[in-house]
Image (cartoon, helix red, strand yellow):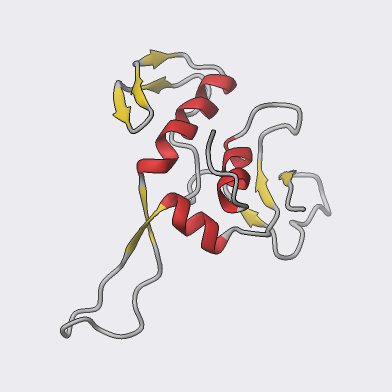
Length: 130
């Protein structure tokens, strides 16, 4: 079963083979940093009121509401479409399900703290965001 792994700076620590780093600045990173602010946004689950100095729990909840409605870049197509090479986009849930399914996810968050990687694990492995 895929799991979240805490990234370390300890000498000799190596990311497990096949694991994917999902922290900032990757396309999987949570744009709502702890201690930061969440703007007023609305998505299919309803409004998310603007907050400042957010906690880890609020950060993960904001990511949970954000994930279903955001699009992420995917690798450029190998073949041109009408002579134009394009960078595609895909919904985060569809892309996570395709790319992250069955893989361990690595982030800096302590394992006993809320983390957006847990949301990605749910999405990628069929549970979807709750």
